[in-house]
Image (cartoon, rainbow, N blue to C red; front, side):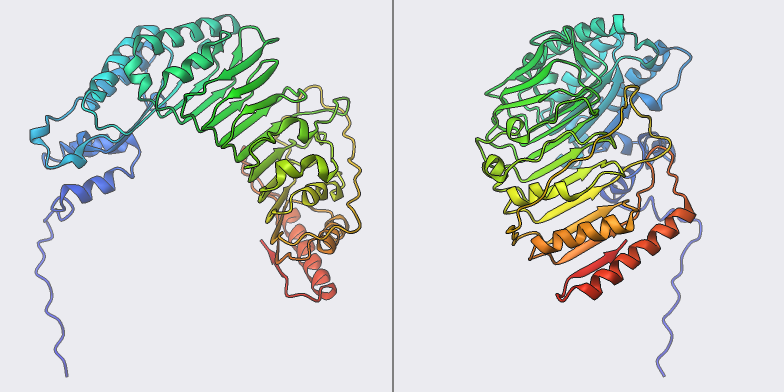
Length: 464
């Protein structure tokens, strides 16, 4: 009989975590929120230096408290100056101690901007930071229309005063600022390393004018316009641009116009439209020159369907490489057969996803009107060979869903999988009606059973 292994003689008072090498301790600390990560420096003398050796740091003004805006920004600025003060290189064990990623989220506060700018440029002088991100907005208590233009001017002055910091920016998010005619183009041009720009709830000084972005030498790869207010957005020349997101309560035909964007392959558009709005022709909106579009998302926010189905000949050049389509926020009463116009125009389509979004806590626009249905009949000889996956989220009407799937099966002869999902939890209130949820799940199972009886292929139907 083999002898039992000898028990280890462990001192119960021994701090075994502190005995770990710095590299492992930093791996642990970097998974904590910043306030918790900083507090680890107070655990013992052994841990004191660790917060200064983090390779990734996110300083968020929301983590700081104060009776006034000035006190909050004082605390934020002081923390930034302390944490970003570099350890002399000869005291470091290796180059991995350098701060590689820095994310700063702060308010436009004129007395503090110079301190923040100087601190960042001092850090950048070491040449080790690879990713620098800013998220900047006016203070929440000062979101008044007359002040937003002034905050916009302050921001542009800030960007010009600290050119080294902005040249090294890789991502920039701006909220609730008002820009002059050429400010956005000037900003992109000044940010040599900028890859991702988000403009949220911003606008032009003259909302009846167009935002024109002409940056032929920029490396910008992603542009997000979230509720940006202007007459239209013209992307004249953004040669490295791969992704555009545009979501707006204001509906124009079209709101975004694409010029020289040869690498664009992902487009995400979402508008609130009403029955009296003229529908949008995708052939007039999406870029046809490159033919690289592979992912398309359209969000209707449970309002009127704002696109007009078109004949394939108008879209084939645009959709020839389109592989993934997501149609989101389709209102519950809407017929679904119109969605097949995309299938007919996109021979390479592999994944089609549809979702219905309607929840009591979702606020509707004040000018919501009666929604109109969309009428479209696919060609009788349509045979799509490449569609492999159909996903449907939150659709409750059993007959409608069954008939729609039958229609897709009739024309998508290569379809391998169908996924039927219930309604996702609401992001605002996280609420799901358990009684309705059980009824919807039972309905999805009945749909599955019916389709299995009718289908002679080895198609897989998954209930989620």
